[in-house]
Image 1: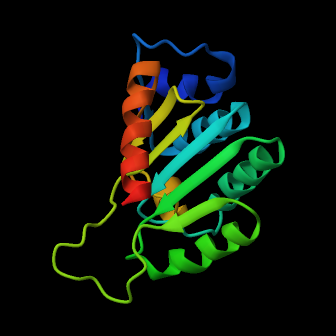
Image 2: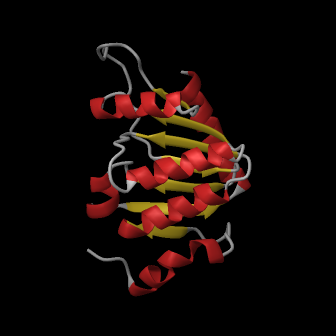
Length: 171
């Protein structure tokens, strides 16, 4: 399944288009990586990431390197990853050793009844640029799967997403 032609044509134009809060844009399939790299590359103050899965192979390494570069520029980076995908654990530990404020949502060796799965996938940059949708941080998701996300720039939505992030982070 391919994205509509106009969206494919615009996929490489993320850095050249001004965000329009009144016009959220779909980010479909292979558009995800360039959109995310552009967002992270343009970050000035903060990046907040929630991911269900974080498997640092293939194209996910590009995102990882962009996050590390942002941190070196002085951007505050926080990343929350669900603990159910065991292969994510070592990647979370590696990023933490590199100085990124990253953690798993649970640290218990088993899931007790009532424990929640963090299945959200969200990136919030500078409190207003948001991508939210179905794409995991895995090469399979980014390179092969049919995925749908939405990009929007909104301070109001950004405040809501930051509040959501903080609730999950502090829980």
